[in-house]
Image (cartoon, rainbow, N blue to C red; front, side):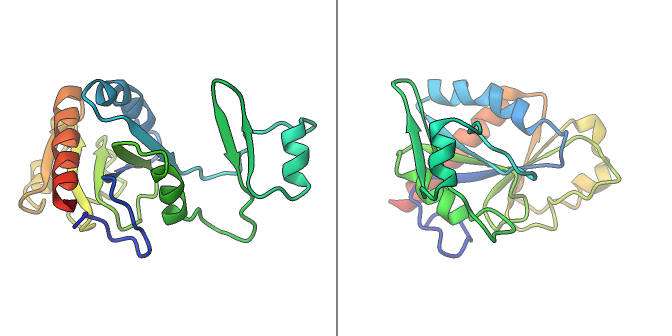
Length: 192
């Protein structure tokens, strides 16, 4: 059985959250990991949570006009890319199961979720020694691994981490990559 706790989330693809406070380097880490994951045979989709309104469409363009007129969803496509835009009025937060279902139809080997740190999904937590910010590892049962700089993590915190939780060096990209691939392979095997 896949390691996922989100109600209504039906996905045979390993799903891993990359959770951290803003400014910790989630996007920078993903940017470095994605080509390496692909090289290892793990083409990866990313779902990113935005804490603000955003628009990938430009007012005045045909696709924007059609979306504003009520197209739901609106897909604009060219030979090199496509974008699906959908209005979600009345929602306070994005619907992660819906987003996962959308991405899963494209059959990536792995789905990484940036943000959504409070959702009940398996997570790799990144931590940069912001000691005024709470660490989720040890309190969030969904954190499977913690990546931080060893010199920035007090030993008394490390001593309280649950047994079996992976502890990774945030500066060791290969170590983080190895852990993700091993974890994802274990998830893939568990679903068979």
